[in-house]
Length: 249
Image (cartoon, rainbow, N blue to C red; front, side, top):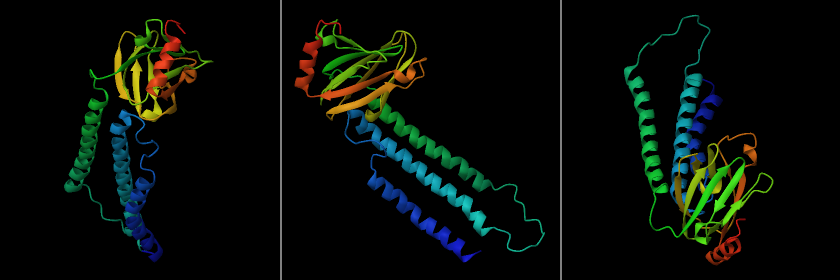
């Protein structure tokens, strides 16, 4: 085997763990910011763990591909047909059990986190209704009265006001087709299904504006089903409720 190829493969074996660890230390959120919401507190570790597991599997698979390419090349011009191996029971059992274990572990942690994220409690402080419509959103604030409703349009996407540090229950519905209430930065999505009422509870932990959108293909103007989540202080939230009280905005 050429010396350069051998050095390359050895270097790959030695450096691949370092690449993984360095990437996790520099970009700990792997595309998501920590602490934005109570959902992030649950989802982020699952997201990181899934990527680390995928990285380990990817590096191991790459090694298995390169190993025979470098170490089992034809070393001469002999026309002799190489020895054939039909079965290797230990290897076949191994590559059946290992993926099963990986999937089982990911499934366990996913189910565990999902149970916490979708749990309904009696400790929420506010309630907001979220109705998906073709092709925008309608947000209602029951504590400000039955007419405290904000309806958006594709040309004027609505703003969803959320109080900082206070748990909110979202009542999620649709009046036409299936939509998807999605706030990417908060790592959360819940479907709006006609005839079905879904619930979601979480706490926003950082002030600012965060984009939201529909992530279910719902028709011609699906791409225009946008909204903005505006996290404000509790005092600002109460002031906002006063501005829309009884207006049917």
